[in-house]
Amino acid sequence: PAKDRNQIWERLQEITREKLDKRLLARTDYVNHQQAFNVAKAVARFSMGLSKKDETGKLVDLFVGRIQENSSNGFFDDEPDDFGGAYNLYGVTSLIIMRQALQLHANMHLRDRKLPSLRTVAEKYLNLIQSTVRQDGLGWCFGRGVGAYGQMHCISLLLQAIRDEWIQEKDLSKTLDTLRRLFYFFFTTYLDQENGCLVIRDEERTTVDNHTTRMANFDAVRYLCQWARIARSLKGASFDIPTPTPRRSGRFVIFDKSHRKEQGLFIYRDPDSKLHLQLPLVASSNPETSDILAFPHCPGVFDWPATTYLPVMLPELAFGEDRVIPAFYGKNCVTGLGLRNSFY
Image (tube, rainbow, N blue to C red; front, side, top):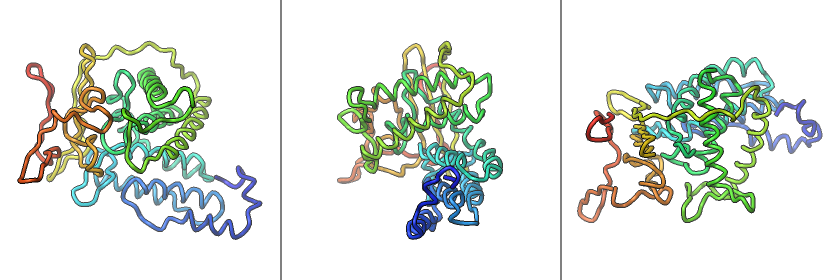
């Protein structure tokens, strides 16, 4: 957004500049993913000359500091108040927004100072994404806001990491293979091949209510432009690579572990049976969706259509006329799968 990159800025009337200044002024200190938009606003205000005081660094430090306060393992909690524990896709979203904003900051020295702290958090999600992407390319599939955004956000974070050389050379081929599968699933599942628009809501696909079709298509166009720019800047990266041989595995990724709660994600994959499921142990910021339930999630098997869990798999407790699904547990939890040679 720097003025020297946007000559039209010099032609704006004073009243228009004042309106932009008021719109970009961050008045609310958010504790959720909306804080990332405050970082973007601060970048725009300073780089466009609306303010001589740059608050970008302070806001980035505040964001990273809260991650360390609310997670023992460095993941982003989107609802830290009260019980907390909404570890979902919005951690990836926040990192993408802040990294894009810093890329456009007029002060490149500040960008270079703040990137290492963002990288530390991003590496947690990069490892998680590579473990959770299914063999057919399905990306993030638990928690709030999944669907088409579960593909687009993962693709953007991986591309940014490859461009910034956050991926080690020995892991590059594995990362490119993950990226290839995410691309394929996104274009074949959510893109209308005839009309060229994004389909996020029908009898088989859906998302949260505040994700409108118009907004999703604008986001998809913006992402496609970003992907094209980043792809041109990648040196030596090619999708012409052999597919790594998957192996049977199971592990529990800890999001937060304290004296009062334990939260994380159990990931299981079996290349022989093609079963790849995830069991999230997190809080819900949107209780009306089944994508947060602490049961095995495997879209197309247990979850169908999207955000609707197979009814026969839901244990209900009845208290009079009220029915409760015991899907979130807080302490001394054990996740496991199988009878013999089980994973725990």
